[in-house]
Length: 331
Image 1 (cartoon, rainbow, N blue to C red):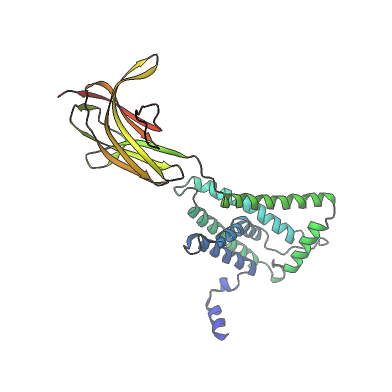
Image 2 (cartoon, rainbow, N blue to C red):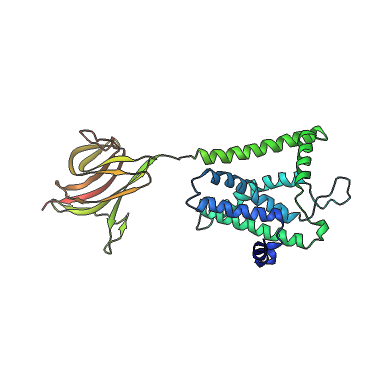
């Protein structure tokens, strides 16, 4: 017991005198961050529960605590400086729902963007800042006027406000408050348990290599000689939310445009490659383009199929396609 008291006294005065409710919020901030960033806790249900409390309550509660450091006065009092428990609770939820999106909006204009890590750090910083401000403001008040958490009184007030309203207007406001809280909890819960996958797609792109070995989507070769290879890099990005098997076919096509439609007069398959790509991964493969026919403005086509390709691959039937217009001279 003596050792524990000694350790307590070693803490800075600001921490030892931190109001109990604000200390509880500070502990919640630490636990919520641990549940997100600690590998052991990141995939447990504890993360969801702490996340709910942190996002929907902590920022608003500490903001209200900074605005109203004084204890709420009873209705018959002439001092209207404070707010009662049910008002403080309602404002905590409402302001949290307003503060967190504002933090996300600010982050959207920063290099960090709207991602889990930056949002947790920013929201934690804002909440801890409100805790510090609320603590200082309470210390500036006489001890008798400082806000304290009257748990039993809060429960009695909440029961009276919700189930014994003074008027039909109060009853309607109570119902609206409960529905708003339920809607917020349901919305966040749906976002956590049923994350939106987004659009499924595959990207096909071409790259060329610069003199210093850098791959760029520019400066493609356009002049070829029959039988002489030139290098290109084909890239495939899988965003289909599942693993995919692809086939890439490289064709050199002689085409003509008739009535605004491109018709293939002759085609030669130059190369073919297969790739298995996991969701969210990218596959890149160098290819040596070696023309086998000459001509001006030939279409060098790269045809991507997400299943075994047909016996007669065509530009129109490919799942994704890319092309270059090239000139090929004879030897």
